[in-house]
Image (cartoon, rainbow, N blue to C red; front, side, top):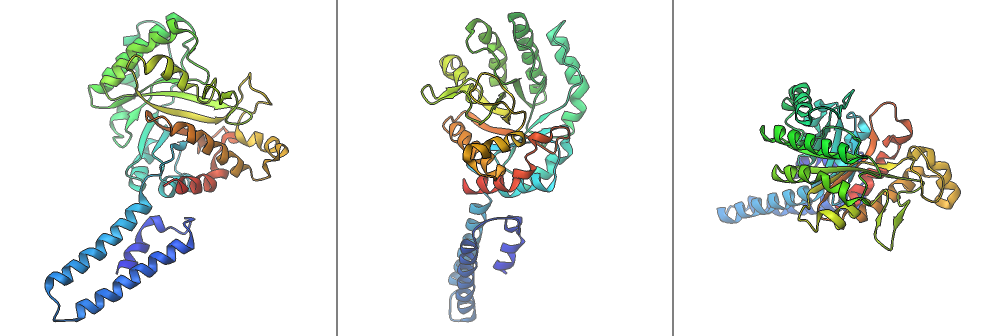
Length: 365
């Protein structure tokens, strides 16, 4: 019976790469428990307490092993998904990431939660336009009225983004956007829904301009009051550590969030939870080496640099490095690699690396 329960769990799917040694050792342990149980249960002179104790012990052992296997990964790496393909399902149900981002296809959220109940889901609704003029409060209302049907009908999504990569290049633009986010946070909060604010593009906002970046503090304060989350995007090229300094332990692209937190947010008691809601290899300027729009475009270069011909392994190795950075900061909830199941972005497609990424996530339990 216990072995049957073990095999019924989807954790033991044939796609898993849990070692055969651990697998057969588990079977052996349960076989021993079953033999002992049979001997105890067949002996009528044994007390009922002993029989029930043995049954409970065996059940406890089963549940302990199951929970150990099924727990969330300790890694903070995950994916930015536009669907629920077999590759995405593998990452979610076997790798068991802590967070995931969904673009538009929110019907998959309940399936994701069923496969991985502990996962935190953020949602982004694609917006054909993102006006940043006129009343920011009215713009937030327009956003809510246009999207509240989608938001309210998908309770499996834990928090919602608004604008994607807004213009915050000037004081007026940052002020407008901050007021927009304050209003949006409060609208969502009035329905007990969490907001993901910011969603700034790689290299923004300007961490060298205190008078500019602090204009976003009202939005951060509003979000913290409603259990919200800050999001930024971090890409690099030709490797994930492009423009990252081992001296300052932060970067101008990847690891840039640390400049904002260490210089501005932490000293002012604004240590808001953070999600890197897009990351990976993308075209950036100013780092040594060539720049690639998508990791698959960099495969040949990596091989030339002596990394071998396994592009997936090379990419996951770099994501593992990024993971070590993220896991040093408790306020970071996770980072979602762009993209999987999002048409039109072929060179960024995580699908060819799904198995390697899943194996990495499994190794971090």
